[in-house]
Image (cartoon, rainbow, N blue to C red; front, side):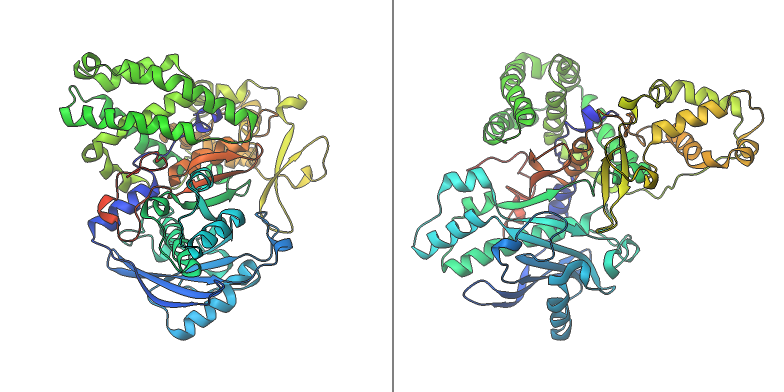
Length: 532
């Protein structure tokens, strides 16, 4: 698993948002709005509640005035247009008042164990104001603006798992519906999206066209804070990739497609083309990759002839044939071919969480350890990490925001505070000290305790083949944006809009069902404007 392929990821039917929508549909979930205390200018608070898996969860949304000079997507911000808490249960009036005081302060406040997720979002000012003005004038907003921007607000953080006093994941880990990774966060995002729709309709005094509303997702700005997650949670990464690869293997093993499955793929082909046509970004490198996809997709669809689709093992043949196209197209094809096979692959979503933790085997012999390193870790043993290009960057945690950052080792201070994300370099150092050593791992670690972490990762990769990013994460060529895109695609993000190799904007829940549309919960793969 290399950074180049991770950075080409697309959302699939196994992405967390898609899975959540199916769960809400299957339970006949209904979103209610017991509290709406928003004034004509759009300030105040609201509460939304929904039942899932036998529990009730409520989003408390708080909208406040934000001076224009304080609006920023950067993590250093201290004020936002809106702030949110996903609450465990239905909050009392006192609890709502507490959250309304605390949520706008975000990190500066402290929260309680019934607060499951903390978030904030800023308006896409130009589109938000245009939609409100159009509705007030008795008109619908400009379709081109809706298509091109695609969201009314964008979140700048969606915090879970114990940050700032909110509940630890253990509180919900065994609950139906929220037990999978990031399900509470995805529920929060979907409810926030609905709030943004309600807010502009309230301020505009009229209803948005349903098709326009459906196209409006939730934007998100994501930076380096998310990148190290896949390194520090190797077994979770392995579980996600195992599920994806198992799903693909199942689909490739289908000998003959049904007429319905063939028609499903044919119906999705023009949707993919339109999605790619609407995906336009300012970044030249990212736009060049999109342009390649646009050129290659007609070649893919031309290969889906009736003869090819009715032949034996057509999906397997398409995957093999995809080697002639770009890596991004190969990944798009994987997402595409999974779509007609929900009955075959959707149950795998239950395996996205993992009960396993990395384990150290002290009884392993050093000869076996050396064999593992030679066969599994050759990519880490080859580079010379004393060369500047192979150690050009270092990861650290900022003192101000306690967020991961990436520095230039030869131009910036702070390398003495480096975070241990230099996995490949650590493994090569382990390899060097193994020279001439005999015995077992326990004896080796008594003499070289500094290698405990690297050794545990080596043994973990032997049992969990997708647990490691097989690239040098401190080399000059490392692009954190590749890790971001991989993780965000599992969330269900699309329309990646990189602003550098360190942060990106995305769109979540675009095309997803509205609160009253859960019956169509599973028909929004790579949506485009006007999709019914």
